[in-house]
Length: 249
Image 1 (cartoon, rainbow, N blue to C red):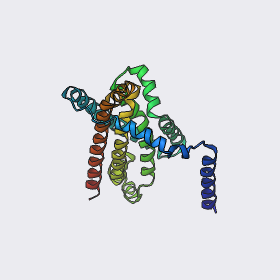
Image 2 (cartoon, rainbow, N blue to C red):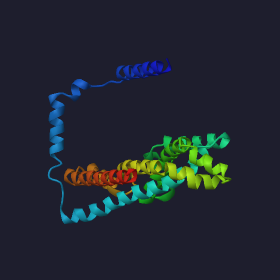
Image 3 (cartoon, helix red, strand yellow):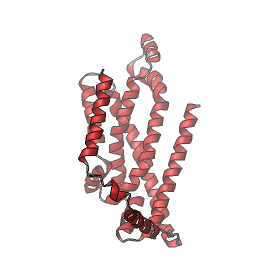
Image 4 (cartoon, rainbow, N blue to C red):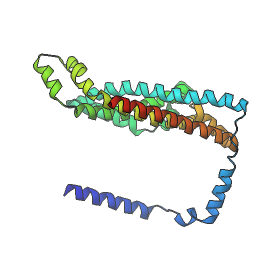
């Protein structure tokens, strides 16, 4: 009964969304819109592959990759620290989960805009923005994984007189570690995209180049930046998939 009510509520929300939004489907699929989009896309060709531009593009791509990797690593550590009380009980659980909700409720772009005031323009603010937001996401996932961990190993160690730290280090953590690593790698995939977007607000990397060249209508340079983003995302995605498969063997 509860499931039916939930599905009915979701269906009603979807119908209300279509009814309340002014969706211009006829104009979107019109020949005029298609022709305008075709002309716009044609301006991207050919991409700029001149040595001078590539000499600026490659360091920006590395900066974006470094921001995503370091931000994810910091987030995993911070998220695990907050997940420990969030997976427990009492006021500690309530406070930790409220903190995780607050961290992930604020988008990366907003965190970047706030942290730029403290850290200044550049990749440092972008890395911190990724770390703070992702800590909220990973912390919630980590907490749920710790709560749902099979209790047999932990119970056995407790019966042998092991303390809480020993139970966590030798029973709970080894059980959930593949799942925690999988979550972390998945968020790294997301953060490589987010890091590219954060440059739009001055956080460095490919996003900053994208905002600059799109603003000046340098469409061939914009195409090269977009291609670098796609290549970087594909590289990280492939590495992440390979690592997750290796962990599950």
